[in-house]
Image (tube, rainbow over all chains, first blue to last red; front, side, top):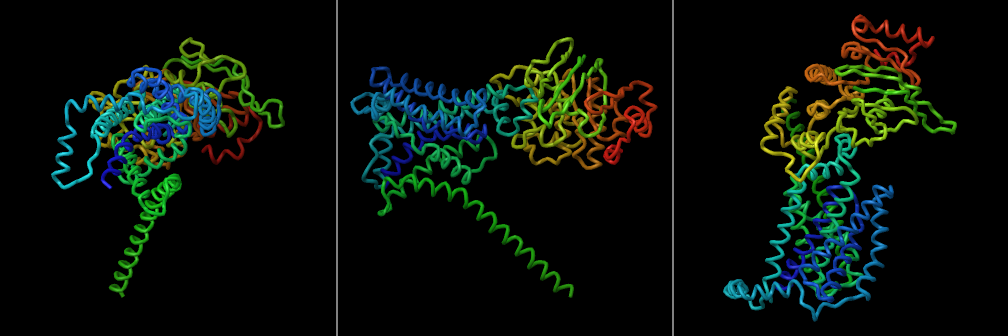
Amino acid sequence: MFISLFGAVESGIIYAIMALGVYLTFRVLDFPDLTVEGSFVTGAAVAAFSIVNGIPPIVATLLAAAAGFLAGCLTGILHTKGKINSLLAGILMMTALYSINLRIMGQPTLSLLNEITLFNQLQTIWNIIALDSVFNGILTAVGMERLPKTWAIVIVMIIVTFGIKYLTDYYLKTEVGLALRAIGDNKKMIRSLSANTDSLIIVGVGISNALVALSGGLIAQLGGFADVNMGLGMIVIGLASIIIGEALFGTKTVVRATLAVILGAVIYRIIVTLALRVDFLETGDMKLITAVIVVAALVTPKIIQSRREQKRRLIKRQQLKVGGDGHA
Amino acid sequence: MLKLNDISVTFNEGTPDEKKALRNIQLELNQGDFVTVIGSNGAGKSTLMNIISGALIPDTGDVFINEKQVVHLPEYKRSQFIGRVFQDPMAGTAPSMTIEENLAMAYSRNKKRKLKLGVTKHRKEMFKEYLKTLNLGLEERLTAKVGLLSGGERQALSLLMSTFTEPDILLLDEHTAALDPSRAQLITSLTDKVVKESGLTTLMVTHNMQQALDLGNRLIMMDKGQIIFDVSGEEKQKLSIEDLLHEFQRIRGEQFGDDRAVLT
């Protein structure tokens, strides 16, 4: 149980980078960008292909992000310069990327099992510091028997993801970032304040997909393979993370909202892991579970809200009645 | 300062819905002019504003700002030197962003936007000083989201945002029309104060004749895409609503019609 939860947090914190990317388009730019389904795989494909061809894993990972940035920019250009509806622009890009991803990998699945990945390298450095024994020692002390293989990935990825969060927060508070946020809020107004909305959208969608592809590249290295279909349903997973996070932690400020997205991504993974432990559910049910989670996260706050309103009105009516009786 | 030369715009050309929105408009504004524009619905007032702001490109004619031909400059580039307040109080501000963030965006209007923090301590102080001039207590609510403000407050903020960088030209597009009378009065007097203090070259479209007479040093009346009446200076000061209606009747040979109720 603990091991599978540990695994959920480990991959959740990497998927959180993807969720941050989706947050940038869906929430900040108000641009429902489906490129994500393709660019996630592009990230994985570029990272895997580069590593297989002997490029250092860290460079391979950065190349993955760059490829995602390019794909995102293209979607942005299709939308702004080509005047294609945002949803359709994303779908077109996602479709095109499927072929491109296949071309990059040369085959539907590319294995990294015999390659040195970023996480292998991390492990080597980590072993020198020997922190694992410290953490596992603590766990053994509290009576745990099955221990996680390594803490390296989870700890380093928490640092990386929060680093990205910090950069995103900062970016969204800069002069450029403010203009970017205004696009999703009031496009007409920011244009009347001399902001070039077209280029802001292009760069914004680019950055978003760079994060998504970075996440894809890391997931490929974590799982040990890149697969042309691994992006399937990615957009819903990203949305699920955002919605769960927002429902639980709120969106009062940008700093809060991005934190909510990260925690949402981790919680989503935990929910899926727990759901898959239920006997009658199979791995293939994951998409269904995701959809149910999103629906639940969307509907529950509304139900709670209307219940609360009903109760409030009921109390008001009763108070009036009591008051009325008193007068009579 | 602003010069429109022989501007013509036709919508839906070649179809039964063809409409000549502007016909050979000739207009020149001097530095510091405050011009009020009146006219019935469909007279071309809004089209004129859109031509100046760059939201619309005219079929023919030139637009000069500071002697510079800008007719092919896109809206976002032109807005470096044009401030604009829209009729809809929701249109001029970003609701889910805070007051200070909105002001910061407006402050970047005439500068290149950089990867520097938009709201700094120094700027906060400056924004507070500007907000104090509105007398609405907004200086105490810098971090409040603009969506929480009332229509009047949002419009006052829009006015501040479009003027405090002192653009070359200020366009006011019926900016008090959607407010209740007391708020409209507040925005009107704020407008008067701001324009007087900073001497902005201003073009204000209004449906309210009294407002058009009270404000500014020049008044133009539009009808069917043309400027049919143009008074300024002392002559304008002496004008009354009755005079305006007579003038319209004299020029057009018809009643100002159904719009009378709207206009007075």
